[in-house]
Image 1 (spheres, rainbow, N blue to C red):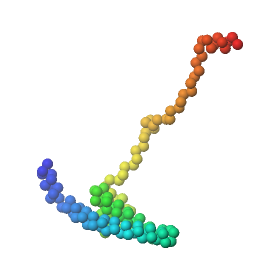
Image 2: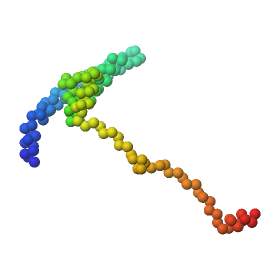
Image 3: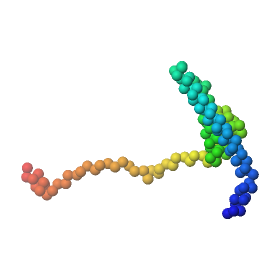
Image 4: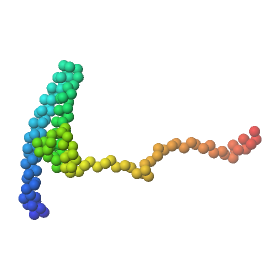
Length: 141
């Protein structure tokens, strides 16, 4: 067990990833500040004009995507190194690279087999069972 740990500590790719993670953590901090300022600016713009600013909204969307990419990399859910190591979110090149480098795509929702699905229960209509006394009274009429 300790030999595995020593081997992992000697692995240069692990140290490179940690260095990228530190740099991206700083970028995440800056991006969070920018997103906060962007949110305040959008709220002020909305108060003054009565509608949101399309350019600020597009920038906010791209920045939110960038923050998501950073968190995915920091949590080892993606091998894609976000901007500046890959194209900025919203660029045309970005979509194809992300698809290639994602470690594990989200699994497709499992479909329940038809045999396992239950049909809704129908309440059975109560059958009126005739007693022998009822038969005699009906025949006598």
